[in-house]
Length: 384
Image (tube, rainbow, N blue to C red):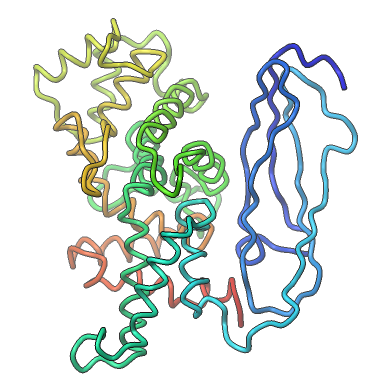
């Protein structure tokens, strides 16, 4: 063991071996931070259930980009996944408990808490009781409806709104996404298929890991930790190269706020703008948890949530709520691709579902959630 008296950090990333991401496991990406004297860290790789007969499979764990330390040999390792002794004849995603468990993996980036797993599984299996179905509804119709409702509930949850949805709002609201009506993606010049809407999938996975770390305590959402994570993320986000290129360090408060207004489409009142300029130049108690006025103002305009009450997000400001509402449908569509399909959105598909969601006004009438969970691309992650 070398000198451990200083702080150190290292990136980690999983990669395919004979096991593949999306089906066998969910990609894990992040950066481990070691305090002085700290020599041990862990991270989670979520292993998924499937009904393919595969035997022993392996995935790779790779370390890179050390800071304050040097990497020894080897800097990568292989992890073995043991297959089930017997696989079911049907696709495992049709099992209620596995369906719910996979939503914890994909949408919330964590293992399920037992009460939540039991609750949402029970929402689906109550269709076994004819008395719990809607009038004239068959068991299959009930299950179909309940699976869509359960899936949507994960997206609508405060936990996801303060992690995945938050992450998308921060990216879109600051880094200049296309403001044309109904569009939040920019098609890449080098690809006719993949949209290059920030965050791209790999960056999304790394960032969502940071935002969700430790936010569930004793099977409940810890709102204080959630808000701490969000503020810490914004503190780091404003120092990224792509953000600094758009908002250089010598930018005045007026120019900074004007650009955020332009990028978000949010219109500030004169008194609101004055208060934000004060936060930018002399961050005080209202900017607690932020390391700069730049980070504080970015957070307030693009988010501004502080608490959850009765399952609803509470906003400090009118404009934070305005931007959240404005981006709700586009972010809903975008997360469907990142979570369910584990990939960047394709422009045509994104535009199609956003148009339907805007036209019908809600996910149920648009049949968007149902379409994703019934799609061959989603189902083939887990079985033939």
